[in-house]
Amino acid sequence: YFLYQILRGLKYIHSANVLHRDLKPSNLLLNANCDLKIADFGLARTTSETDLMTEYVVTRWYRAPELLLNSSEYTSAIDVWSVGCIFAEIMTREPLFPGKDYVHQLKLITELIGSPDGTSLEFLRSENARKYVKELPKLPRQSFAARFPSMSSIAIDLLEKMLVFDPEKRITVEEALCHPFLSALHDLNDEPVCSNHFSFDFENPSSTEEEIKELVWLESVKFNPHPTN
Image (cartoon, rainbow, N blue to C red; front, side, top):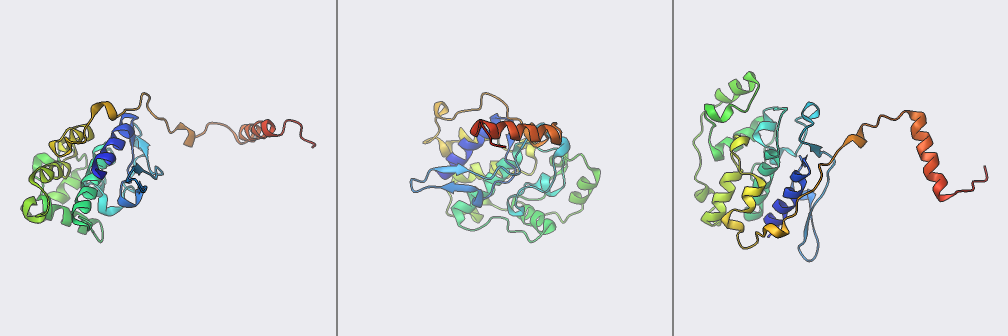
């Protein structure tokens, strides 16, 4: 149920052309009724802001491979990877990839999903990044059934589709909501999307200092239309 609520919320966020970029358990809020809300949009950005994107997003343990490899042009797939890490943590009650640093984080990932082949690295624009990954020790893919013995085969199938090295081959939020694992909860009519794309232009105001002062003054006058001085 928690997983469904996360994906349902992400569907709305992504439909507004926004990436959360910092999904982790501490940014998921629950009330006594187990209603889940996604919080902390301090690192959120629109998908078109590629020039402003940075690798300094997402707590390392929930960071997608493309971010670990300093890819500056990423997509909503980074949020899906984070959801996969959270999903596994919900099921096992422990972090999936508790890396100590970037190198260790990538090692933990490849120990589970295996070393990527050449075609799975095509999304990386940096030749140095591709070269670095290719020179890492080759690791075989682990059996998810053996790693997660308490999970059903259908749950494992969804997790495997979320934890894909190549972001272009990673399952989307919409596809995840339609996955058989969530069939009992999935209701297209109760999974809203945003009618307009969100803009972060307010973070880069074009007004001068004097114009901002004037706006503050005008706003204060609304509350005190007859100032004494």
